[in-house]
Image (cartoon, rainbow, N blue to C red; front, side, top):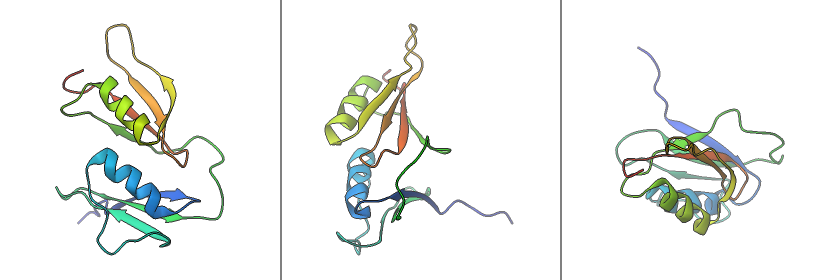
Length: 124
């Protein structure tokens, strides 16, 4: 039997609960009931059974580009709408890789500087 991915862990130097709230709002997944501000870690589960996102406080800040990042595929919104929503929630845009034909992605950073991408979705 092979292992399954249980958590994708994201480091942060601030409050893990605050970062979990950003991702909770972005992904529409509630934070764990037993997590609270000031905890050393916070979790948001996937209600469909996929890997949970685990946010863990670390002592050192982010020093370079992520070696692993999340690519998000918008559902019910266009890429531009999803990018605007992420920016309103506290993300910042790093680069726009949208191609003339509409394919491509936009690279953003969460409030801790962790990169993620929003691709062209079902509504483009």
